[in-house]
Length: 218
Image (cartoon, rainbow, N blue to C red; front, side, top):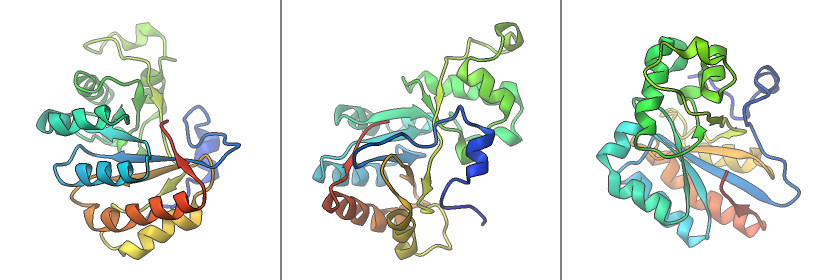
């Protein structure tokens, strides 16, 4: 599996309107969690965040919100933020525009947020323009409902917790060695990521808290 831990500069240059990181004059990091809510992983994450008074943003899959409404409610009740990650975790590069955009709309019935993260980070320029509201409305008439104007959130650092070939220790190193103030860090609250995320997250929170960092909402 090929991926880069740090978002390549060329990606940022090609898609400058997407949010890759935030300017920071102080020690602030932005933790994000994709693919939940999950019955085991998400409560674990919430418990860990609470220990450090840390806030995070959860990019949720619509069908998982339907299946785990109590956990989704807990995310919000504990002061975290949510974002749309489609209803069925669709790859924008491999999905026709109408299906992809209507899948986002389906998720938005259950996820009240103006934040969107494309699964796998894959969204076409046309899809991006529709999602962010920069495409002429006449060109969106084929879709079932108007598309809300989303802010598309990407990332600065991938933990790699989704990579089953990666050791938990390496996952931890990916985050600690590559993160700096203003960075957006990706973990996953999912079955696939559980072994690596559950090892790395507590140590990431401990390390950066000791270094004087805060974890805030996007």
